[in-house]
Image (cartoon, rainbow, N blue to C red; front, side, top):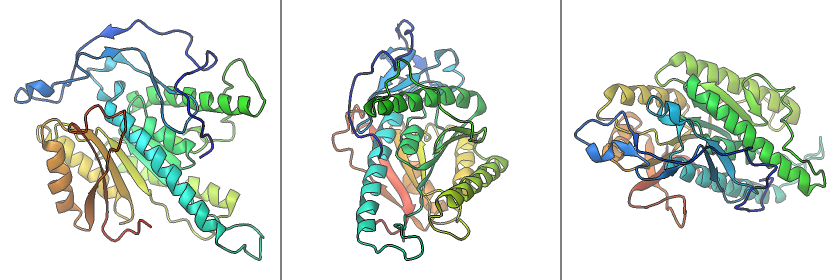
Length: 340
């Protein structure tokens, strides 16, 4: 992981020029029916600001999330969800620990005679479903070195792109200052050598409408292109790349599934496509609202994917989780997947 200093404050060079006034608001959750009146609202009684600052352990400056309250009633991804913050913090820690484990293994291997270089394990590949305006898990994964795809509906993705560009520039600015290259403002990201879908190094943004096979085909093609470029540039593994995602992140994707059977079926169709290789695992982070979420994970998913199993994640002392009795994090992974 390239940046390990921690800070809860952001310098003026990294802050947006101003903040919009705070508003105390109740945002209506449009998917819940009258039989779940207490769950119709998310963030009820919370102080909302247009710019929200999220510290993530292991990163030098907080992440900035510009929320879009104007479209929050139409698009649930327009504001920051607490389970999304928890997912970002966990994925960053997971990938960082995975990288350390692999580095220790590499030290015990002999150097190749042909290139006199250490053989490197292939880059982790991460896709975030319904990344929302914040797309925090995607940004953290990319900054941890994973080839990452953040996906959502087109109108939500535009806001997510702007947040990602801001945060990648902020992290780069801090690194440059540490290297003695002080700048008064975060430098723009150099994307001249990247494809239009790329937000920055390791991070791509693509439309993924649940249940749309054509969107999955485009993402698969893009992943193959990225892997082809990486193999050509790094020559890590050689041969034809096996294009599949190691991790799919689904933060707050399990809302009101029984009230919206069409939503559930579309999500299942998308997961079938992503998990067809039998090696991809899914990380779920969600708020317990109606019991539908638990039912979906523990009964519906195993019935569709009999070779997969559920593993709960210990929250430990994650201060982004307001109440461990209300929020849940878990892995849905192949039973025969080697986690060592």
